[in-house]
Length: 301
Image 1 (cartoon, rainbow, N blue to C red):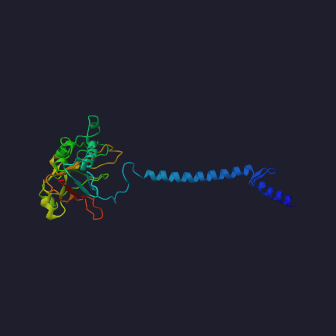
Image 2 (image 1 turned 180 degrees about the vertical axis):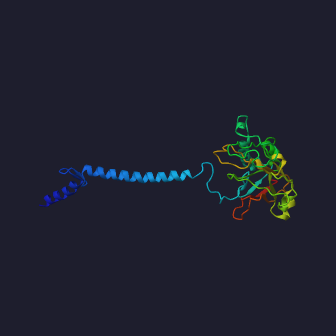
Image 3 (image 1 turned 90 degrees about the vertical axis):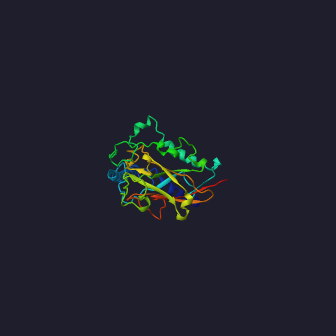
């Protein structure tokens, strides 16, 4: 009796899995399973089609070359090369190992500005003097302007491969970060902030100023030299706007070199550099928005 009950019990679940008499698998015939499979295939196919269609419609409203909404885009940041570890550049002129990584940073950036005859075909010659934005390239299909690293003179690395570090006169390369379709609006001479009113003025230049962060340390900073297009201490407007990687794949930002000629040795100098334009604002929350701070210490040994 026990064996028969055990057989009957085993036969119950086995029969549920496969009923050879009714030819059913898990309680359903082949045609029933086919109808269920077909129903869910159509059901999930429709869901997938609705999802793909929605995505495609959404993509039709998104431009290929620029962000659709830029009303919350912050003004561009102002950055420098070489990159400072914890905002500090510290080196000893007589010890090449103390500044070789700074030279490597500068070489990495400026190597992109080595323009061969073949590369020149991807750029426009926008002249060697500042010009208004839009005069040279006001349409997205125009080629970006060519920037010649030789304009950086003492800081170009062409004549001095140590960029002044070996002499204790270090160079920094300054640039504005790329923001699609951003065009700086320089101050008119009469409305410019006091700190730049005495500088060489050009309405087609976004001026940059580097000063000691503390007024009492201004004498320790010493003279500061700027090298850029046309000999101006700033960014020329003909390089703006930038239209994004698809339209301006070979775009080169205009550069500005700054060289500190005679910083007092064995003293940590905190320096602030700012770009000045009506639409470049500064934020205490972002220390690189339109400006940056850097500490420079030149050691005797």
